[in-house]
Length: 259
Length: 352
Image 1 (cartoon, each protein chain N blue to C red):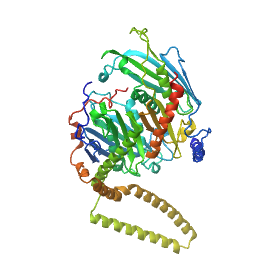
Image 2 (tube, rainbow over the protein chains, first blue to last red):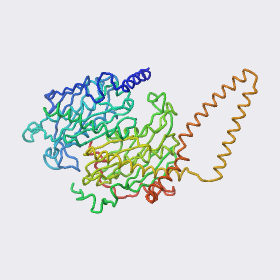
Image 3 (cartoon, each protein chain N blue to C red):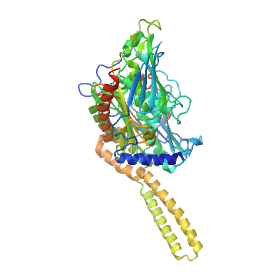
Image 4 (spheres, rainbow over the protein chains, first blue to last red):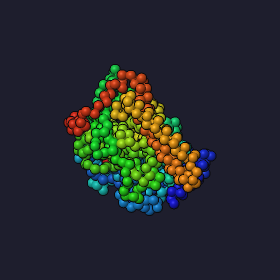
């Protein structure tokens, strides 16, 4: 039954794509309405709620004192987790994160880590003994597609509003979390050979390929991930790189710079 | 950590291990090394030692995972606890879960899953010694293990990474380049250049990415040549007697087909005709299957021969540099060699 429905849905969406259209009337390069609210959870050191169309994601940042990794004794630690809670979609089940959630969490993490968004050197308390551990927890509330980009935007927005709780932990004064980059993640999915951005859950369900590209302020790329069993042509890939730079800059200017 | 080399590329354009920027590390492969597996391949690439095995197609349990119209391709990337400098906890980690997922997806486009509905094709890749680029090494080994298992495939998959050190793009990162370099871009592609795996971390400009893809393509071409030579040495035959036998067999099939046609023509009893028709339908189906299988296996015979000749033309001496293991050495010996395992922060659990 579900297979028959998905086949009909696939036909419908692929045919629309052939005509250059999408189910909600957007263009291929058009992002849904985006609302980023920050400081929505007082108990967290930083937080952000992202509404991307009907998709809702809440990201909380907590900091704790802990020990550093042996190979980076003078640097803070980032730990990113993401759970696909059953509240967010009829397709999600309770339980420990599975590969889909782990992959998304790791791509969000890669964007933050590799862009150098957090100045980890400043999060060292005593070299080799104590550093700040930054926990980024993504709480998915409603999956209407493109959780990955919503989570990435939420993560950097929450980090930008976060404080290092020095007083609470008895490690000096409260200071702002040192942020030096604003990475923006943009995901494309393949609909009948066309790559469209910010896919809805319907579009995701008929696509066999997702390409995520995370860009920095200077237009360089800090993380990428191809996901799904489909193949990607070099031409489509390089075109996506250009688009992600362009649209990433727009999203950064409109939603992140004023936080 | 102050082990970072001052320079990764010397004034002669050579890297720390003496390679040029567009050169891959020496790779040796040996197929059919595990007797219980349906297909297997042991691969050494630089200091990486990787073992891949394929089990299946076989029945998939639990049954709710079965797919009604195709086989499931399941890939498990696993690192041995002793494969890196600091022991890693055995068993799946978040890192290995992600790599398993994307590596399996790298094979989905080439494996002809439609032949085995409800079944599973299990690919197991074990990293015995890690030295930068283990996921790409595992993919290269897994391709050959799939062929060794006789899984019908549209073509091969090859994988290698491009990185950046000293502001320059380099192919197939070695350990120091991986640890202290500015970027890592692992890619897998099919023989016709479609990208089936793509990840990246670090920092690259759009131009560098475009150049990197081209570089990875050249690397993959070198790997395809190595893979094809391995296939040729295991499955290729130029024995005239065998070719003759094959020709005879084909002739026999042809004559038996004629006979069945005759029967159909002379038969006057209706029910018999009906039976005959049914038989023919069945036979047609079988023929179709055979044809499809022929397509799937074709590259192990004809195409491999052709393309590896081409490859030899293209790469000249380069190909002969990569020794193909002739299958005399036991794989177990080499995996237990205590060759300098180096610290492996990215391969390990740093990110967790």
